[in-house]
Length: 106
Image 1 (cartoon, rainbow, N blue to C red):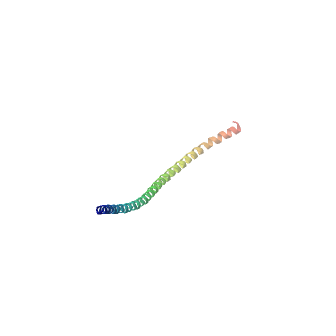
Image 2 (cartoon, rainbow, N blue to C red):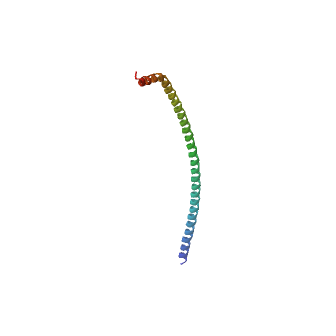
Image 3 (tube, rainbow, N blue to C red):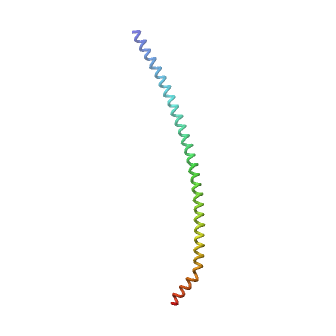
């Protein structure tokens, strides 16, 4: 019987040793998970900030290009207006003459 108790005691000792190892592994794993969550949160914040900066750069670049395009369109529209005005002024005497001749039936 003494050998059985000794054998049972040995088994209990081994169980306690493995339990300590498992507890240590659990604690290490929990610490690793916590560290990974913290790192992931920091990466998300950094990525969010970087994304916002890039989005703002894209916004201002596109806004600048749009302003240049608007300015170009306004200049072209003004040139077209001036050309049309000049043509119209050149054609006024001929138009007046045609209208008068149509009304007077000459």
